[in-house]
Length: 554
Image (tube, rainbow, N blue to C red; front, side, top):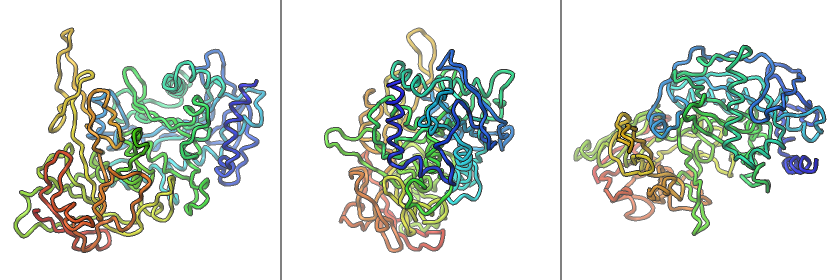
């Protein structure tokens, strides 16, 4: 009993910070939750449904009638980033077409003798309703996951899905901590996925048909989001509770199916992410909050997280190539044009010096479109600048009006953003990686020592972390994958994340890439390879959701 009190005592620290009480929007009462029950997401009642404890890591139970998927027989398609990840053995959620997401509330077992303290970490109808609305709601002040991706993809990705009944594990939280301590968090999360899949998709009492959640017909669930009723570390700025086993259960996790897995991608996250705006109190947009969930879906489709995951141990600093101003960085705003290029939503107009005459080239683009500038057309994989028009409306509006996590807010005025992209590839055979130019050949094979054939894997040679994730395999290039360049000449990837960008860092009417705040910085711009861009540009006019630029040879 001592250990039991210790675990929930640590979790109760979050209550001391006012987290759970302020996250209970709509006046719900989390202190009188049921013991030894599961909470049907479509019912205001709770139902006694204790789970078997004979096999804590693999058994579970569910209750209530679920909502039908909003898309029957979904048809998804794989994008460039999906195929790149698949070559690494990571199947993921398709980013094109119609895809269903299954959101599953997962609760640790609460025995008949559950204390009031333990019952605070149980699902209530208000919590499940809020999560459901965060994913599938219409006309929310903060666009739901469904609404966000419909707009961000310009209709190229339609997300449907369902909120599953609550699945109660047979493990208590204490037992889960013991398993994590002895077997590791990865193994434990894998057992939870197996439990959820068998509970909802197998047997005579199955709840769903696999075909409704397998849009690419690979025999796996495209996207399984497991939400738990525990606090999340990110709501306290990522600070540790002091217990690494609890930290593992309070962390957000995204992983991909491998081998014989039934799942293409799954996430483990907190239901209270749907209430973070209320927790902040100063955030003006009320109602369900989808910020974190949109980020998670981006990861499940294969996008990199653009923040620094490693830091620099020598200088004890972290860099922020995108200044935290991105959905896959600081959880805010729309996806950037490089992300949309990878996901198959928006291909840029490529311009090289050979495309520009003596008098320059004038081009007008609308919001949602982009221009790629480089010394040659390299397609998605290479070195180039990406230009797009930012406006503080649409998916950027709520974050231009409010500072979110990390205290960052989007630009509050319109202007041109300039991204430097280094999406060069490496090709792998086993643990050996070598630089690779051009489009990946996913059908290419090499011969193993036993004479069998294996396919090459492909990966980006760069990331936004200070330490390259492939450094253990000899890929040590420190340049970022994508960084946001300031009109003042500041290149973000060499700047500490504590430095912030503001409106003055956008390129506005009259701005020129060849005339930055640092004399000479952009006149002869060179990429990480040392090759010159050979181009400059000026912003001629910004009107509404269109911008006109003139591109010239340098």
